[in-house]
Length: 155
Image (cartoon, rainbow, N blue to C red; front, top):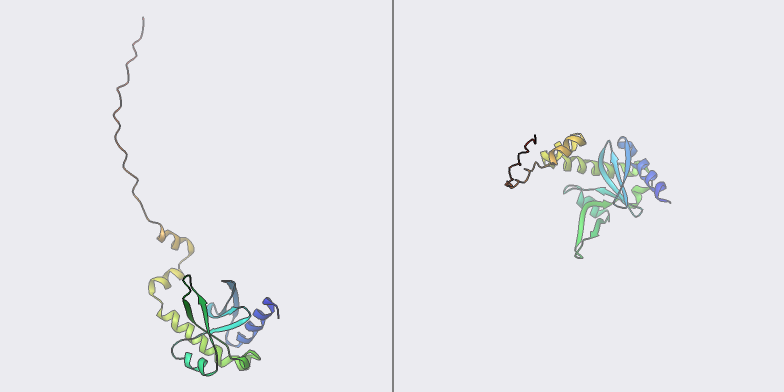
């Protein structure tokens, strides 16, 4: 299945939960339900958002976490796990897993610092204005100037 075909398939699987959309991100796609990011597609693999409550269910189902290598060869594990293979077959099979992912995304948004959440709601121009740091102009050195020579009118 090609890249856009797989994205469309995943959006269809998630559609019973609300309005679905996708955006390209980090060489893959982020999937949204009603503008809330709750899944990723990386290399034709669907990863669903997890939290402390849902993670054990994903692990028992044999799902794997999304990991990536950092700059110094350290492995970073994110809070996204593969969807169970059987859930990839139909929206009905995906719905309980997608509900868990959506719940984890809602919980993560609720835990987000208020400052970050306020910046996300503010128009881009206001956010940019907050990031501008006012700086004083450097003080200029006083330069002694010679008095201007008086011109005298010649008769």
